[in-house]
Image (cartoon, rainbow, N blue to C red; front, side, top):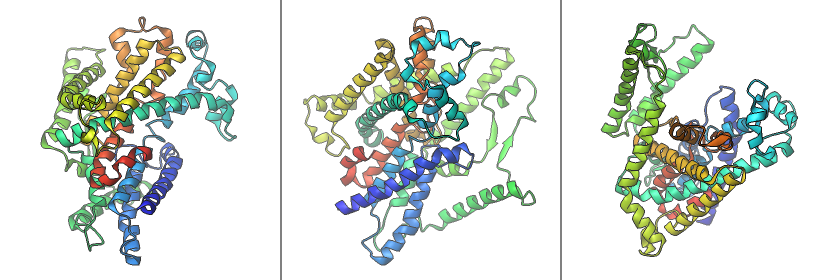
Length: 474
């Protein structure tokens, strides 16, 4: 058993290293995407290779040597957790943010007089040659210039990630067993790794309708790709814009901003089969409702109203609703953590509720202390942590309940605090430091960690024997 666990960890690490080393390069050069959403395509491809090619070969050699369901779960959990690091989740925002102060400073923006007094030199890359090397390249990495700023913000990210993991353990039972969220994105790897006795391929992989759909999608994308290089090959049109058809006010608002247009996302079409009917209805209905609001504002020449404030209100209402729905479970967790109830209830959890609560408390204290150390006021640091928790939880709810491949919450703690309080009460020091929030967890939430963790815990229902080993692996 230990040998199989070790094998799964090694195989998972191999792909994690490859994915982490190539994801940013592939994305930055517009070659494609390895991650970019909460169903990481690169990881899914690797899982397909293991299930369709590696496992059958191993079973032909020795029927007992193939990867078991538990091993495949461990591999997928490692791949999922690692997907939150190299792309939008952290690295694509962290390093550009650290060189931005020195790179964009100019007499016109007066950053040197306004911002720099509130930024310790070790909090960003303060060596001009290191900043130039970041943008120009073709030179060795000046590690000494990066060590302190990158080390500090990576430490912040790791602490926040640990808090997220502990919170995911606490919320799992409520969302999985009580409210029974469908977790549409989990259904795909779940069906892939399912195994049936005396069969090389399981029922879903032997389904001819699955392969028919895959072939159709493959042919369409293949033709579109070949058409880019050889225009003589027929072009398959899967997107339709309405900009040329709608040009007059107020209806032109439909094709402005987040435009109304038609596009067939074949991967999304497949995922929608796992959605509940009310969720499927909401996804298109409320988008049209939002566009009709813009039409009305255009008709009455109302300008300067940001729909971002609607997003803020919706997020606040939603987090309140989630807390209310889970109040009994959260009370039960508190009672177990404080010893008022037996801890038998959390035997099958990835971490005991006691340790999860302790982890959240210690992590929160450390995070707030580190933010205060660099100059943020304690109240703003606490508000920052609470708002970040709200954003992450809402993002995870969208993925777990609606199967959202790509989530953009569209707000950050900076936006919420300035919207409710204004800039003057916060002060320059807090505003300057809050500008770094994208380097911790960006408000572009397509690779937020919590959905990966909660989905991994949901997938582990197929192999509960390894659940207590998941947290160290994540």
